[in-house]
Amino acid sequence: MGKRVAALITNMDQPLGATVGNSLEILECIEIMRGEKNPLSADLTELSLQLSAWMFYLAGKTSSVATGLELANEMLTSGKALDKFRELCRLHGGGDISVVDKPSRLPHADHKQDLRSPADGYIAGMQCEHIGTASLVLGGGRQKKEDAVDHAVGLILHKKVGDPVKKGDALCTIHYNGGPGSENKLAQAVEILESSYTFQPTKPVAVPPLIQQVIGGE
Image 1 (cartoon, rainbow, N blue to C red):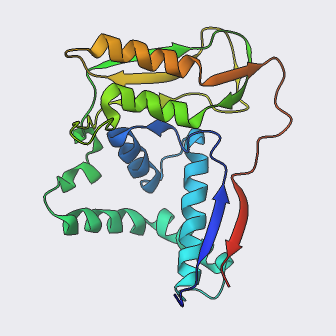
Image 2: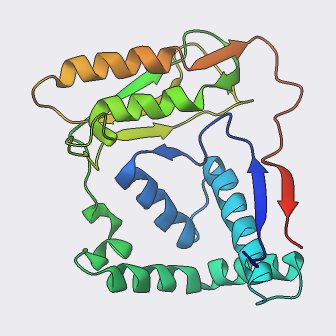
């Protein structure tokens, strides 16, 4: 179609960032744009910067991906990215723009429960699709088109692939709401999450790179 295009093939063997769920993910993005540092958000920040760099380059805004990355970093650290996000929220209309500066106004769940490690060792793997399904079961997505989405529910991750754990450590915190069927939904989510983690006694030799291949871009 005459367009300059690039595809970044990225590692999806675990969730990006530290959160799963609508409001929780928005909160994490706002925290990143405000300059707050969470080690579990590092991969989300890195990929966002790389995608921005490629978009600057492909659009002709910069002469190279490297200079695009410099521009993306400058926009993040200077607060320009947060200002642009605020503007985008305003232009969409109908939303509460004040959440950009007061993210505590975002919907939040009434209840929390930790999922704890069953053993000592290291996290060897996380089934990303299953973790997403657990959030959906809690109400964070639709199983059929008529379903309402609960924007408050989801997960906050405390450990990711390669991290050491002790038996009883919190792997993640489940955010859920009460109501009819809520205990059954929670039990289903816990069962799915328990099967989503794999462990090994020794530290993994290497965690696969976040960006595995770039296709196109010429």
